[in-house]
Image (cartoon, rainbow, N blue to C red; front, side, top):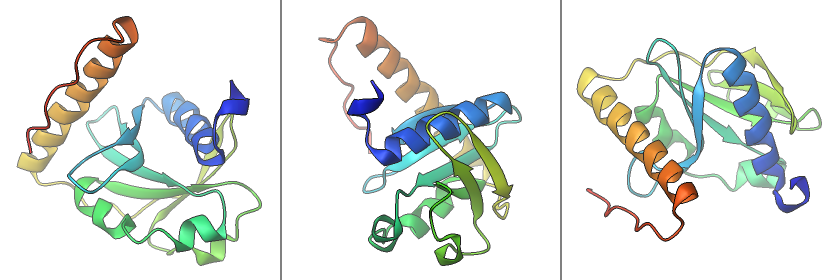
Length: 150
């Protein structure tokens, strides 16, 4: 199966495994708002939301012009990269996770900026709904997708 995954997807898998060991659950390719698609959205044991963007190399990072738009949709923001990535390119106030396909390690916590209660409630509902819909599609691939409420 690893042969079918792209480098960023392999990083996301390793990050998800590490975050799970910290009590987080996560969804890959999560859309917090129209026009945004986070590589990984994680929900923590205390209800915190973390967004992790997985970057496979310098060009991948430099072509990402949307990442600052994610900040309004999470409590903490992280970059996930492998050991060969030039980490000096990454903003110092964002979190840093070094990962591979099997695990990861948080080297730097992202600055905490707590979501307002109304946005947190909306994100929790969307996270749960998206997770349930994905599970349903695994069990029943012909199950229709829900319309986007936005």
